[in-house]
Amino acid sequence: MSGFTGEIPSGLDWLKGSQRGRRWLESLPELVADCGVHWRLRLSAPFPYAFTSLALPARREDGSDVVLKLLFVDRENEHEALALQHWGGDGAIHLLDQFPAREALLLERCVPGTPLSSAGSEKGTEVMTGLLPRLWKPATSPPFRSLADEAARWSTDLMARWNTAGRPFKERLVDAALEALRSLPSSQGEQVLLHQDLHDANVLAAERQPWLAIDPKPLVGEREFGLAPIVRSTGFGQDRKQVQRRLDRLTSELGLDRERARLWCLAQTVAWSIDGGGSLQHHVAIAEWLLEL
Image 1 (cartoon, one colour):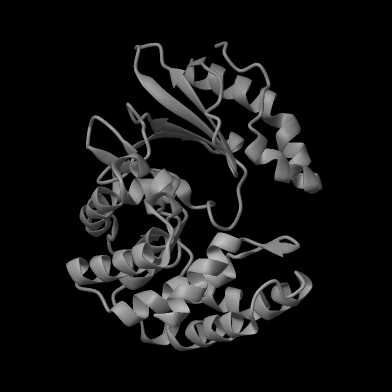
Image 2 (cartoon, rainbow, N blue to C red):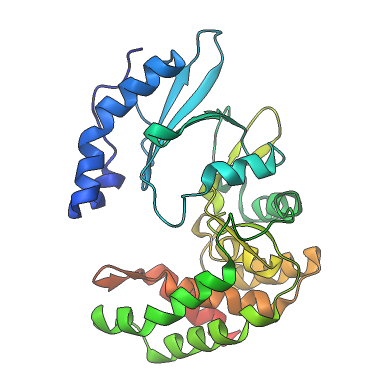
């Protein structure tokens, strides 16, 4: 049951800024220990990449390799287990078990686990084109959050957050995002399960299937929205030509409405660009390119 010595990846440091976050960080050694006993795991040091969860490679008594994941639950990941169950391992990792009292998941481990960015931009886009239709299974809200509700939330506080952050980019981006968030939700197509954070680092090389999605942040909405995280995926190259190439290729090969996909990507990218008191400049640059397209 050993392996966790208390080192917490620096990506979780932002949680120190809130009382709830600090409590969760302080509880991690106990949570890891409880889960190790519960599932009889031999644990290793955590994976270094972390932002809203702590993930540790582990081995069960039968010798199988798994991942223990402890969630800092927020509105984006609260239905992660449900999404994995809905996919049933088709294009995504298997959920092997869960420990609700500890907000813990026992997951299939991807081996070798290299991120899709390692395959390069063209191959990565090809993989995503094959993966997305398998993940886009019909779904309803509830239990999942709806894209329409999320768009309304982004729209409600976007201008206020932009002002609070010191207006870190041009107002025309805010105006364009707000217009898209007002016009798109009521005219959506078929509602399917979406992974709203399906970027190059959230698809890993595996053995059961060549590539598997991880870390779902599920929403229910139309397919066009599902292209947003891929279009702005930094691991696939981040210049104007590459962004346009991904948008054009994905919409063409998947038979989707290019303009709706462009606007959804623009809207979410702007909504997610404001980070505390500033902005994510790579998001801003992509939003500018999308507006020009």
